[in-house]
Image 1: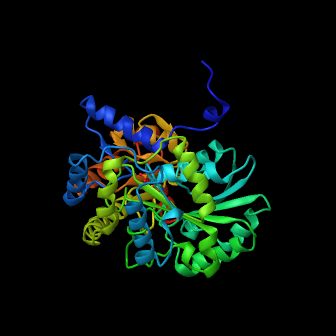
Image 2: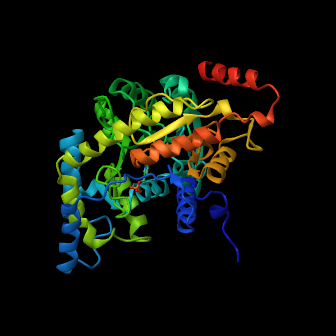
Image 3: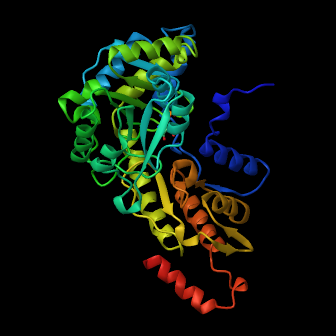
Length: 417
Ligand SMILES: Cc1ncc(COP(=O)(O)O)c(C=O)c1O
């Protein structure tokens, strides 16, 4: 049967693929340590679950307006006002089935064929493919370890053209945790405003998961003109540990919100009816739950950074936000371990899964093939055991060289270089 060129131009999500493979191996009885998950390992708080159970029991089981109930959109407006200092009306809010769905609708509603969307790399895996699905053209600009994975205003200026319709900003970032300061965001906003119609698509899903007291603001709030030029995307998956519920939202000017609503009304219709009252409860809950998670993630972040840097050939700075370790593995590329040569992040991830029974996500899906991503939203025991296995699997194998001493010294050299 025919498949469309649209479907053929994109890749399946590599993060979901790794998690699925690790789950399958576990189901087969193989003891796998998985660092694949892009979700907190804490359960959704009980009072949020209870609100959904109550809604279900009271018959909240029918269609709602496709953009979400008015009460829910009002709650989103209150959240954006109180926490981000941004004033919106319910008509500017579209609630969708996850922030991923919000982003999909945004690109579908905004792009014409050939329109350019600037995406800083490393990027979250879905941005380029969603742009391609909407017939747009992803324009990738790269920021590596040396710039703490943050693009400069100059880089952005050079990447933007008359065809640039949007710039994706994801701070804190998946996969790097990079978090732009308010000043840095203001400088990027100034570049965007140099183009009369370009907008920022600001994915703020990790806004509450930051460390060391970092200040997180929305690019929509850094200059008065920016609010009209930003689409804010957020959701409950990460901050309320509600990944399976599928709730995300976008806030924008009314014309874009109306276009998104039209698309949603002709595709999924409303997000699930009985989760919507519970989402209001989640939006209004205190910060205690997320603070508890951040405290746990912080300890794991420190430990995983320490353990990764202790593995010859791997390096990483302490991540600034989110719950991912994005480790530079260029020191192991081209090397042979247990008879397997690893030349890129895919081969390294495959080797680690086969030989160490550890699931990590290759960096190529995030636009950086020298790196691997490990989610530390997992127990400290898994972190200790998984990193022990990785270290063992990447230990220099003397049987593959007659220059053991030289090689051992070189490991140290890569580490410091
Ligand atoms: C940066 C980023 N944006 C959006 C999403 C989508 O979240 P959801 O669709 O679960 O709301 C994710 C999930 O991993 C993410 O990492």
